[in-house]
Length: 114
Length: 113
Image (tube, rainbow over all chains, first blue to last red; front, top):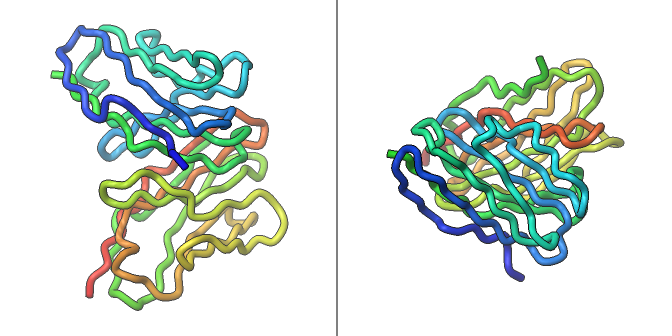
């Protein structure tokens, strides 16, 4: 079956611009996660959606970052007024129910802020 | 501070040799423990996970990991490495209170013929 998909695969933007990254989770998965992978930094948890509950935003690095999940499915991560330090690969994952389940990762969106 | 440590940034092994990748965590309670692999050009894939019970867990691709509470470790092992195992390996923990995910910085594995 289809896995987690993300778009775009690559995004180049200028400093100060806003960007939107999209994630389509596996159908039927109620949990969705966003991570950021920077060179030499490993994976950084950003935000977690579980069903219709309010998301856990504790990992968002600043108030320029926001995310929403519409209809319990597709999610959009928005970065406002991008900075060069936002350059990274943004990974989305989904799991059947919750954090204890296996997470299936998408291929990521590589964001470059010039 | 809570953390996950993978002390080996890069490891090189010969094909057919055994492998052990180290992972240590610092949390008050036993978290849920995972190992993921990221192959070049591929997404992250779960190798194995530990929640409770038998402290030696078997995963895919011939990998296993052992949870040692006294050492706060969850090391990944494979008895005989294949060239296709060359990849980046990440240890991860989830606090069983929920909503707290932490990944290590990863260990890059090179396999030489």
